Length: 96
Image (cartoon, rainbow, N blue to C red; front, side, top):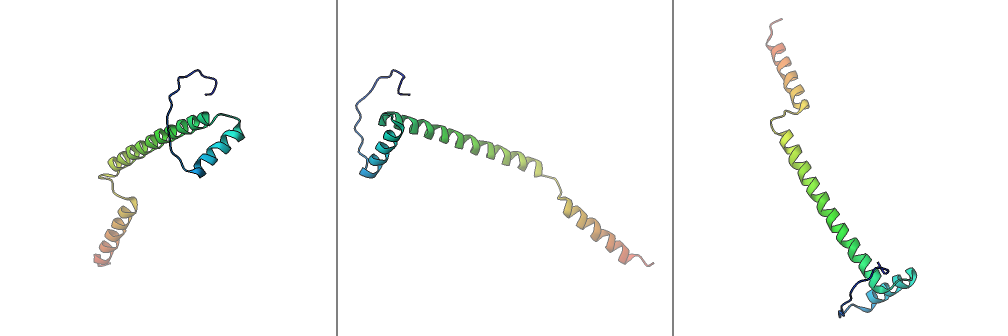
């Protein structure tokens, strides 16, 4: 990041003192310019957002897939209950 040649633009950004102190502390701890710290943070944010969107899209696709499978399929426990109810109904109707 810091070793890559790049153009720069003057940009004024007002942030509160606490955030500025935190950025400065991170930069000092990592011995990097604040600009590099900010660049890393933005890249991680963009990756997180992309990953989150991808996960959401996968979850939606899975829900749609499961919904397609669930349609017109009887729950096994329901089938067993219906079968048992029919068995005992016939048994009670049987004169033996």
